[in-house]
Amino acid sequence: MAAALGQPGDASVLPLDFDDAPEYNDTTMVLNRPLSWKYMLVCSSVARVVHQIIRHDPRVPIWGESKMVIRKITDRRDWRVNDVVVVEVLTDHEDELFSKGMVELESGRMIHPMRGQLVICALAHRRSTQESVGSFLHVGDDLRVDLLTEGGACGAATDISTFMPDPMVKAVYRAHVAEPFLLEKDDDVPSYPPASNEKTLNLEGILDAKYDSIPPNLHHVGQLSSWATNHPQPSANSECAFPRKTVLIFGTSMSSGKTVAGTYLARAMRESVEHGNVFALKLTGAGQLHDIQRYGDCGATHVFDFVDAGLISTANIPPEQYMVAIARLLRRLCGSMKKQDACIIEIGSSPFEDYNGLYAAALIASVVKMSLVAASDAYALKGMVAVSAEYSRDHPEHEGARFFNNLFTSNDHKRPICVGPAANTRAGRDLVKNITGLEALNLALASHRETLANLLAEL
Image 1 (cartoon, rainbow, N blue to C red):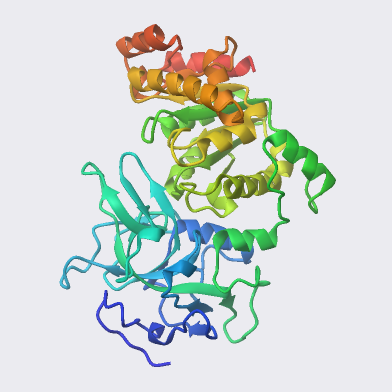
Image 2: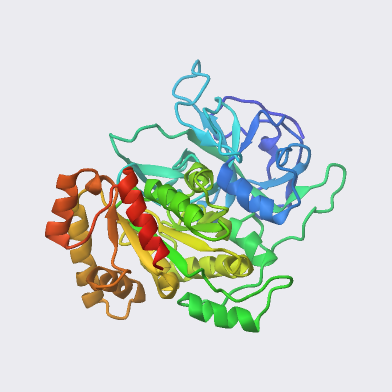
């Protein structure tokens, strides 16, 4: 295959052997080590799923010493959420060498990619209330895309906040990664069994093939436990018995203090439980490795999120698809869960946004023993309390909505404790108490962390 370098951003020319990438209905093309590893980047979310499928030495980059199978699909009607794609980085000017945006690598390290560099990411949606909105469904005929998150969610941005701290990486679509996606150095034999008869690699699809499929009618952990008991997984205990100390963290919006509160909670749990085994699980949001790494940095012994279920983002995912993916993840974790002393479950963004937070709550409602709500201010929290009541009244069949309304109206230890910026000062905590009736803790204060530890000891 001839190498055509071309100008970055020229959608009619594919660089470095990509010019001959076949169309959807043609035979696949094997990309025979076209680049050095320093030139091709794999976003963290894609790398994490691929690691589950192939035996991979994390010190050696994926695809760095192997052949990649690709297929160019110009008919965007054939694109699917969570498809793995190759894009080429663009910059505003030819003389501008590095993108102003950043990419998160499989180690969690953040870098500014170079103009013309190839990045492996996945098609996704994003519905951020404070940063950006976009979707692969909005990609135009020029095939220009944005990395909606540093972790590799790829689509076209349609709305960007003027207060967004960092610009996004701009790129152009080059090809889909096909199945089987990885060939050994000198063989045409896949190094793993093809996931399905699909012609392109999909993060959910390869996990569907590796792990037993989960029926779509599981609505909470109890049903999952019953099903898993009758469908045992080899070499793993299938009972989904969450630890007695299982605490839920949710918030009024993104950037309301959930992850910071979670890190304090992980440390408090690690110090208070007998063996120090703390499990952290984030069920909704947009995948960024550095987010969940903070839990490990502060004491969690095992950390997982929705990316481990094959979802690079949970935004705009149909509820049935979301619940099947998360149920599959929970089933895989069933054996490990019994060995944990405590568990932190985080619902990212806020439960009433388009990230499936209400459906996540429905799955784990029966195992939550205590909850923290991170609020940007007391009035945002008051609004969430009101929305919970209104939504559960208008949708009485929705278990997730009932769950949150029951939390706010309960009189026991399950009633949420307010954390985050709303609790930063005594005035803020008093306001939370006056208008919502909820107690508030500033976890930056040693005395308040001691209060939290005492509450955990009572569970």
